[in-house]
Image 1: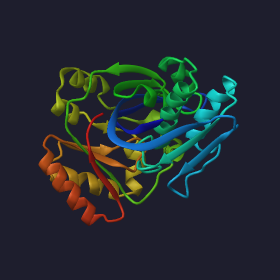
Image 2 (image 1 turned 180 degrees about the vertical axis):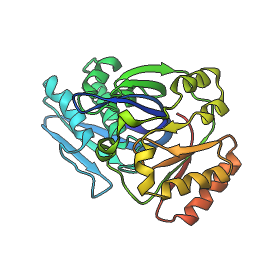
Image 3 (image 1 turned 90 degrees about the vertical axis):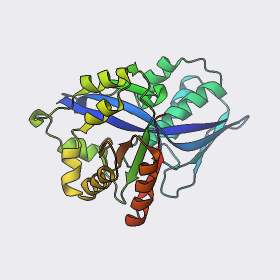
Length: 284
């Protein structure tokens, strides 16, 4: 079975408070994009265990990989005796704020459920996925959604209007754990207008969505990584309605109403930042 695991961006990311368990309560508007990893899963009849192969030598191929663990948690629970081969071809940048690991895990859970006829609903998969990572339930749902709690409480939203989404991941990586660890949630003064963002999405108002793009984590990540602000400025100057950082970073994305300026900006940024990964995609 061949499946696609799509990357997400955060149209809005607000942190409400730090919880007693060390996690943070958030309100986020999540959006899937057309960028994806390709995963091929093959049952190994009569052979036990999970074998994971990837196209990148630095990606773990054991239980340190979320996709491996996603298959294992289901196979262990349901006593699956056959094995599973997972071939993961990565295109989504790693440690980029695009939920690359989480979306791989979500796709593998859905595929494992089908391959071994486990009969789980998406809601049941989401319950199990939440035990592995806060973004996995959303990645199982996909589309456009409001995420609350630690990210596991989801409300589906209407599809985002068609547009160009230009993604640019500079040649640096960011630890989500470190960013949240440095965040002082009780000192956040300017909270994103998440309710206004939801209203704009319901109305199909692309300009209203762009006007409300905001991410409180950018105040933690960007000051020590000036390339984030530089890339955002590049996109705005090239005609993006707005540009912000996704997740804990460092990937920046801009929303373009017209394809021409988006393509021109993509090409210019690839030349200016040859070590960066720059993609033009759209909502998925």
